[in-house]
Length: 66
Image (tube, rainbow, N blue to C red; front, side, top):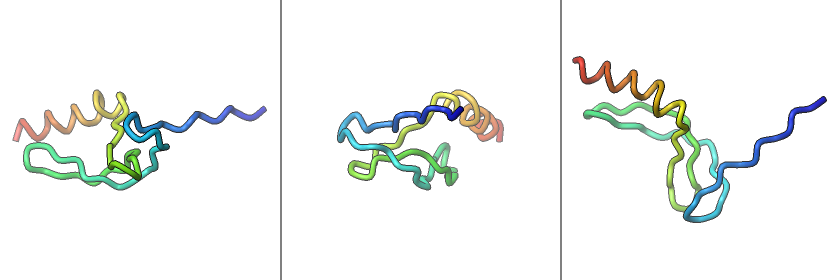
């Protein structure tokens, strides 16, 4: 039994499928390379909720504590 494929995440502006791309995420003057989904036309980046509320919050707290 195979699992059904998830539909691609689409850009709300261009209606194109987002593609995995290396992007730099910056906060408080620090930049981190991360692979995220990005629109190949307009460059809009999709940050999934689990990343925004999980790992990114942890990094923000660590940077703010410095």
